[in-house]
Image (cartoon, rainbow, N blue to C red; front, side, top):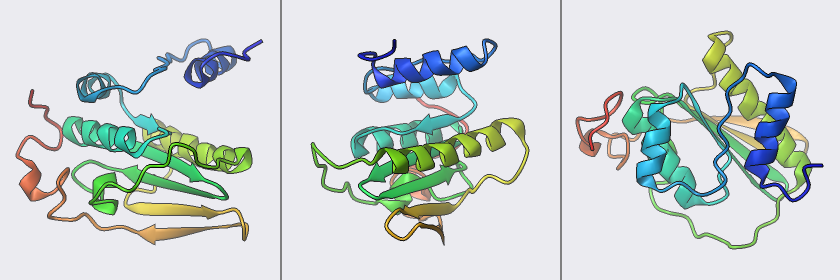
Length: 178
């Protein structure tokens, strides 16, 4: 019944079917910087599974500028990554990737890896929203599907980070400048 629906709308409908009290806004397009900031101002956590680095970094910047936690999940082939950003306190996505990586129009995504990465991302968002448990702030989780394991890498904020570092401006975190 949901074949042909954009994936964001499909996911939103699935969530609403499970819990009619949850408010879900599906974004079926890549938001520009202004829209990303507007969206970040209205939420308590950003859960990103964006397909492009450009979009991931745009959502990262919006999270930092608005002081909103970011849960960023990504997949490539048999690997998945997860980073949970606590603005002003933990490393952000730009700390991890100071320069833009090469983008591939077509890249392999295995459903099982997406599911495992997505499940961890959802759990992190639940921990942030509920206050239960300890979110994995400041860690990169790497899921290795080839060997059936996950590893955690401790991350440090980069004081020279263009997004969250000291030179990024006084408007961060927690305040938004237009």
